[in-house]
Image 1 (cartoon, rainbow, N blue to C red):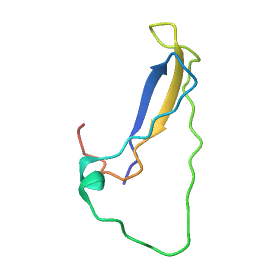
Image 2: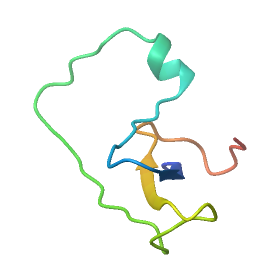
Image 3: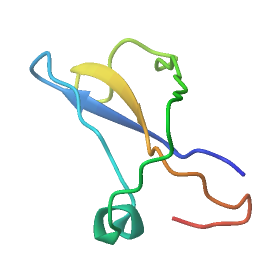
Image 4: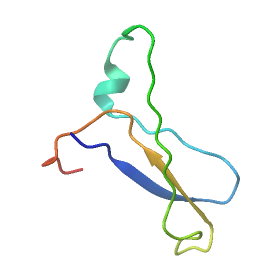
Length: 68
């Protein structure tokens, strides 16, 4: 299983969250107490448009052979 990472540029100091359609269509599930965290950052500080680069992770694992 893998977690997809999305890299994007932003003019403002805002962050985005990305989810799969399946996640958005599903009903909330309570799994008890627990959490996991990822710290990711882009390799470069600015993108091709000269704006600040940011990374976000889709918080649902995908198979290794999945094409998006």
